[in-house]
Length: 313
Image (cartoon, rainbow, N blue to C red; front, top):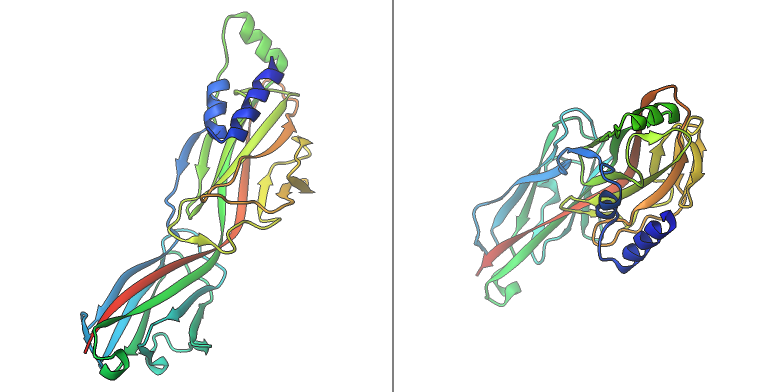
């Protein structure tokens, strides 16, 4: 019967008709965790302004400004936060007026690096441009597309608790007509990339049995993952492998007793990965015991914005 059930799961997954979490919840009642999810916004671009208000007369100057903010109230963004101005049409940037000072330029692309962002830190970016002359636009109305990108690196986190019950305790409850149930609590951290757990069993799980763990990564942000996919070694599943011994983890490799990491690229399709499976044998417990497992994901992310500034001759 078990072979038949998992065979059906495999068939449905290959067909792409339904996701793993929905299947598991149907086959294993109570398998899906109760999820507490923090917002997807981490580094955001806000308060974009153009002064004076367009349309801008040919040959006149104007400024484009915006704020970059770390939305997290607790964690900092420790890596570089890079701002890149890469397109401005026929308008001419005045590097000497850029705020903050210290911009570099290469091939017409302007770059600035912030050495990390503290919790709730906000920085103002302001650029000054000169609109093209009337003869440069053939005395016709046009626009300057001011396009820019913000890149940053961070780490996504997620944790979930699970319950393991001894065979003796389980039999005692079953003899009295009771069916023990347990719903894991999962917390998904702030940021655009979300890590979700699901399990191929109901809880509490019996000690000495196989615990299949399914991890799905989803991009819920307004930007894009740098490179499109997630590289080898970027995802770590934090499970004490001296307690939960590894059964089968084809797409992971053991780091040490603290857990396993992905040993191949994680492909993202429509901003979501397929479920990644790693199974463990549960430890022996006296009665019933709760354990905490977690996952962390290192990633680089970019947010692109565009301001179309109308120019009139």
